[in-house]
Image (cartoon, rainbow, N blue to C red; front, side, top):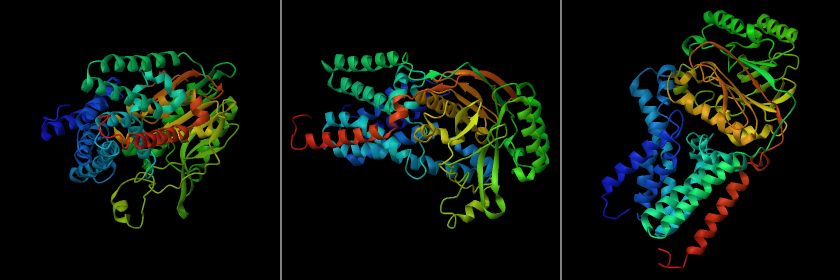
Length: 500
């Protein structure tokens, strides 16, 4: 982009490009924007000093996260301190902090390129992905809106079983860099860039036809119960009986299924508080020869050690405890220092303990099922830990925290990516939606209407085998990209202006 473009104009364009990026994700799903928006950012920063590039990267991040995760405000306002000055303020701080990651990318790419615009474009794809991995790891990680998720319905989805969502992000950025190179160099650069983009998209289409896993036996039947219990009522003791009655009524038509799933904390009570209900559900499931998986808290609240769990109440029993907890929602980091904030927030059971890595599956429908609870399915490295032993995946969630926003749609998109990466069906049971059965290619086979009490019944497959991504994980990609960045930086030193 011409250097004559003013700083103010660049700033506005960076903010706009970031704000457009979430339209590439669910529920809008216009995946080409995931390429176009970063292309604009690369054009804006390719000739800037690192400090100015970081500023534009931060503004891009403000647009990206300001539009993409504004729904955090809904949860903070409804279930935290019900004053907009607080909920908007907390959300704004979170967005500003997340925007530091694109700022870090922009600063790194211009610093390591030593002012060379062509090297900037070469370094951009690996550095972007490495910063995304950092965002998904630092602290407890926040991998939401990683560019690869936007490709679930696009040609690049074919690469996900091979190189995961991080690899899909890399290919998005390679196309963005190629487009930026064509815009700035023109001439012969244009056909070269077109060839790169066409080859990547065409290869992705071809890979979609590859089956990395195979069915195990005949199709099975799943019953998913979406209770649609309002979050503001869910934890009220007076409402417990009504909620349980709703789940039991919805389950009546599902007992003949191979597995029946109730969502995260469907029973808003500890087992010792409702022993008769637990015993009744066990008897019912065993009488029908089905496996019932129920979300509920477990443990000993009186000594401060309790878990967010999925409990098997059929013939096989078992319990999975959530391992990756959400900060401020399920536990408080720096609890002593933040005790004042914890007291302000109206979040029931907000100090869960993390579960053990020793239990990753539950036995259901005659097979091992890989389990994740809510936010855990945003971490591919954790989901694949149950594979290839798990024949299918189960995720239970409660996205009622975020109301009628784009958040549940984004979460469903993430779940679809996990199914595609692993080559496994994923049964997703939620309180208010979006409950769905997702096949091994990330396609939605059945779904319940959002915010409606529903008994969803659908067939699914147990599958065996392992995708390349399951076998390798993210480690090789991170290592390769780190080596590539190191080699590029080493190679271009001392070459002067030859590759400007």
